[in-house]
Length: 228
Image (spheres, rainbow, N blue to C red):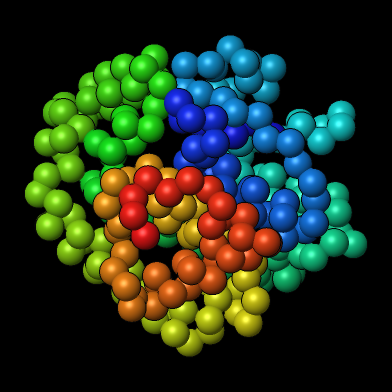
């Protein structure tokens, strides 16, 4: 699997790649992750697109984290399921859309300027120029004032907190792909932001701690950009 990496190859910070690394571990499937960077689009040109994750499974090539998750359940049905049936897939798709349209934008306002610090010099130039051109301002200006953006994230997390208090995991009693979708977002922040985005005692932080410990501490072993 081609996996977004920083200047330190051990720093893997893509929320979409983390979804799939957790999904593969959930299903007990071994994977070789290949570090890939923003300016190496030629390396994954064989996939017909320019984004990771890219999963190569024998003769099969699958892109897009959602499609990969569906592929894993369809191809390896004898292993633990990521989705417990069609209803779970539908609910998981809702979580995916909420995460990408609400949670990701809230996190971006807190972490975008910090991401540059974990990139190679070439990637840092590309990342800053492309994002600032889209935003019409510097990354630093976009992330200020931090206090206001922290409040916006807090409000965004209200439904997530309520769900986790009631069910423990978004997948119910045990985690499923819906949990891995949201986990990927917070692992993105954990691996790239110099300041934590969650406060101790927050039910979401407690859930995140449990998620980090899953699968022999797969998430916890990833380098963290800030003091825990």
